Image (tube, rainbow over all chains, first blue to last red; front, top):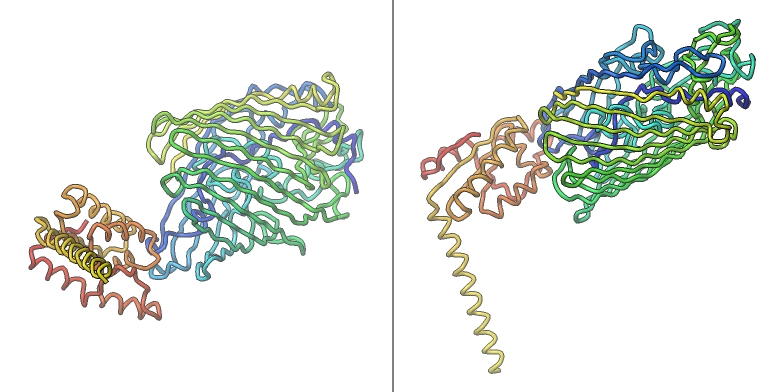
Length: 459
Length: 148
């Protein structure tokens, strides 16, 4: 069953549900750092974590066109509740423990992490929220060249998703990651039978809103991964192959699985661990089936399976005072398509006839990319600049949307484990195949620039 | 024949001179003014880094020929000398500068019981009957004990 073209045409912006935060680029071997412990030197249990209180602000420009004209725009609201354009939040507060089950045996490691902050993991659809386990895995290192990791953990893929969130340079994800990779799980595609494809008020707010049925995927899956790295001179090559549920932090909900493939090659200049100085290039692929209802107006039934495929490549560089990264992602199927006309899900249209929904384009295509440069003149300061672009529904002339963001950032390190991050984002959106004065483009003019700041402390 | 004799003479001379150099190097170590035994017996991974740092700093300060260093590992500290220990490259580098590493046989035996097999150790580790006895014996020889 296909999505209504008309509805897609009017479902202008709102790709910017910034539930995840974190910026890109380090050149570290994340598979090694996250999945294993230093041989012969790991404790039985190391408690660690991080806290990220933040403040964000937009001007809260109301929607300039469409059935919800004059109402709050979803992309100008603060996540996860989307109830305010500004405010303080504890974006992340994670506590974990990692180590070896038996210090004498380095071949068995474990990693456990739980989230207590306010974000798409704990507040996928607002409400009271729930603390949630984000990582729980065991790594077996007995087989030379083939370490095995089992449980819930970050899947091998895009650098922006794979890297440790607490060392990222930015506060908010790129649109590439936010829309294409930070998977949301909806029960319904969000199609409707009213007007140009909206959900009629009579169906009720709960059905129409099409709120997520679980936490965001957080770049994680539950499954089994085989991986390892090999040093050849100054080069370190890493591979990973993983089989997972394809349902994020939740148990499997269909008979299908998601598979992941990953390869990276790094030229090591100096150092090790998180702040290794190296030049890394990587390529990755993932694909799996998703089940979603195509019944209109949020009604149940009509569940169909759609393939969700993502693949990409990129490079990162960290050398001396310079940091650089670039990444490209292609997406096929299950494209997160924002909300109806930029409205907040559950909002009633001005004429009282429609309720705004979250949308998914189960057969759509999209792609995105970013480029980042950072300069750290001293140990205490780093300045960053990033450009990212998202091209959503590139296979749909009327529904295609393009989002561009320039982010300027500064980081001040109180010490190696505590820093202040300030970002300013210039955000743009357009419907490239529509007239500049069209309703979609007028709605997209509503996207505000955004100020974000956070203090991050690792313990 | 003459050529062969000459070549043999050259080879003999080279061999003697190399032996002399080795003797001289050993003699220099033997006459090192400063002798240090470093103890590692903690399970804290940070202590592994610390003891290697201390050894490195001693070499930097005194020079590799002017200081004798032996690191004695026993108890949980023996993990430093596990074959796959993450610090094995640093250990190799220190061995290249004359640092010696001693592994306690008592600990090896006890760990073997827990593991079901003897732990595989760094090939540079020299087995001693008991780590604490090794330390006492070295102190009697004029070594200074430092436990970082």
